[in-house]
Length: 78
Image (cartoon, rainbow, N blue to C red; front, side, top):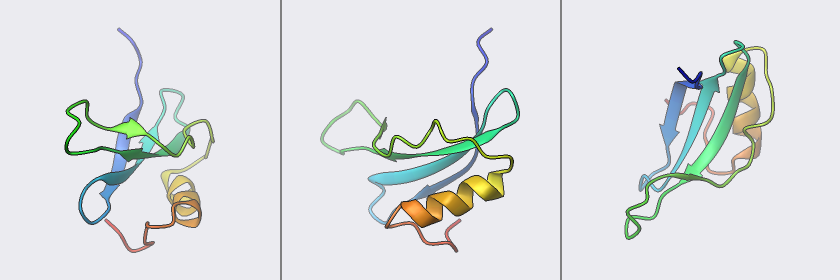
C-alpha cells in the first residue's frame, strides 16, 4: 500500500476556487500547498503554489508559513 500525505487542515477562499491544505507526510513532517479549481473544468483541484516541498516540524509551523506566503489567506481562517 502506498503511503500518502494526510491533510490536517484545509481552508477555502471565498468563492471556493482556491484552497490551502496543510498536510502530514508519512515521515511525520508537515507541509502545505495552495490549490485551484475552475468550476467550468471538471478535472478538480490542481496545485498552483508549488510549496509542497517545504518541510516543517509541526502543522502550526506549516500554517504560519502559508499565512505569510498565500496572499488571500487569513491567519484566523479555519
